[in-house]
Image 1: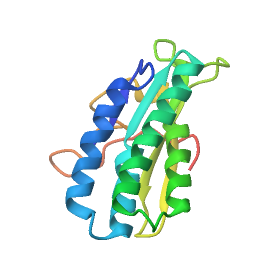
Image 2: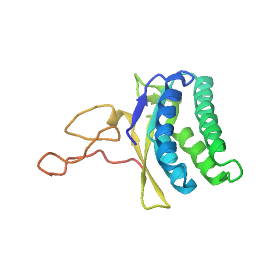
Image 3: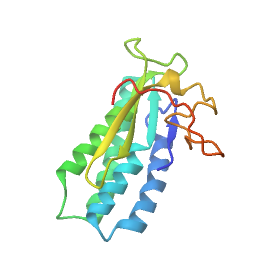
Image 4: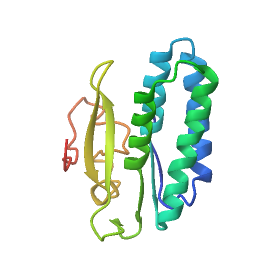
Length: 167
């Protein structure tokens, strides 16, 4: 579930390698239980973020990652394909691989780039919180964000986190 951001993803060559490694761990640990595999594959997918200037590259990257997941999934669960799982994967990829300019932090329409954080609420639900990339790109260790690793200090004090633009 460690998060990865590619600020200039092209058609997804590097993203495929990241996803491949993440799904290999999921397969090794959870392939015997389809529900657990789906849940953890969703978490692995939701932790990959990317920005790309060119629309055709964005679509290609999204499709490549989706097709990679689909092929891995079919190898394990040939006759038990869960269409809801695949719809969720496609939705997350469309929210996490975005067209925009990582240097200006704006999308193709000159609006702020918005990334979604995905977290488990329970075993059946996923919660989405949206953050402006500009707020996240500050990379201030005293202001944890979507891409930070902790939200508490060594003394256990709660550290300020950016407010989502939507939850």
